[in-house]
Length: 141
Image 1: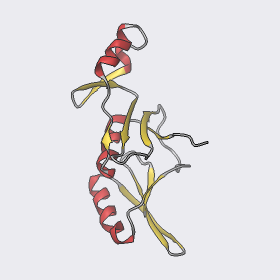
Image 2: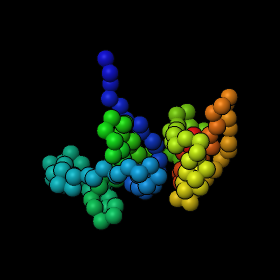
Image 3: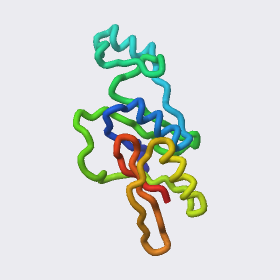
Image 4: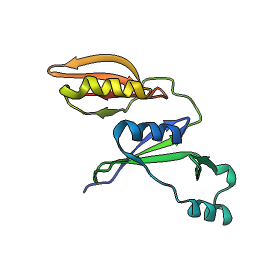
């Protein structure tokens, strides 16, 4: 049996980080349904405190998601976490671009706001480990 799944990343600014990752990966930020949000407030299932405005749109304050233009890839959800990141990720994303594109991709991502942390290799495989603007590690291989 196969299961559908999404990758969830805890962060302090979900909408800003979703924007960053959408730009980094060439994906899109999922639009949120303002009329649905207003309906949830109207029926008492949510309150104004559960929302915010981002880029002029009413959105859920605690989450934003991105999706790939290619079907079949998992959705990535960015959800607000109360505590800041303090230790190395136990799970991380690998952005696989190939050896011939790795240096250009690292430079592009650093220009977008990533920080290069270190380089590593194992056998014939090499990668660069970077951190997104909130410090979440990811690899470019």
